[in-house]
Image (cartoon, rainbow, N blue to C red; front, side):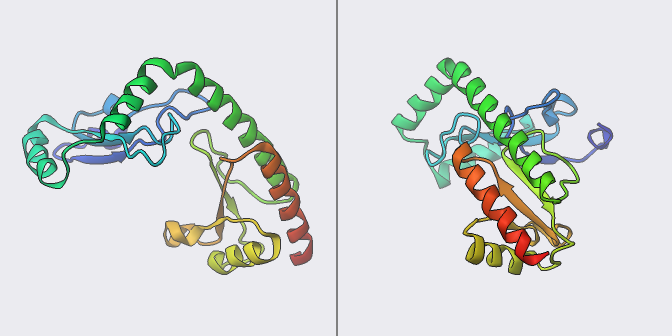
Length: 197
């Protein structure tokens, strides 16, 4: 990774979706440099959303300063959350594998349905549980479009502009739901698109 070869640079990486990769090999910035702060947690891979259990990997030169900051902001995660984290690390391998298989089936299903509707996915996702869809041929105001879809089709999508100016003209769809709900949502989306095209 060429960017990791730059000297005197410290990187900050959010690797919260590390482990939720469906194609190819997942990577960490730590494979390429030790000059990185890596944020991760248990909410995505182990489906422990809400328990707020996470961790930071940091360059050794920053550890003492981080300890001073940490002790003034919080003590530790509660004991139940810590025990759940230990159980996740020791016993959840089969469950996470099954969860990834289910997410992958949902991902492939939604990609096919969106494609069938004529919605372009420039970069099909290979990890996490979101699909970023080009809708510029429908609207260049993703915020207004997202609300129109919510009001008329009863589907919640995230406007691309929420991710910055380069996200304008896109919508983010999630496949972190049941296949039945995804099918219903895709049916509603197809009906909605028939009214706007």
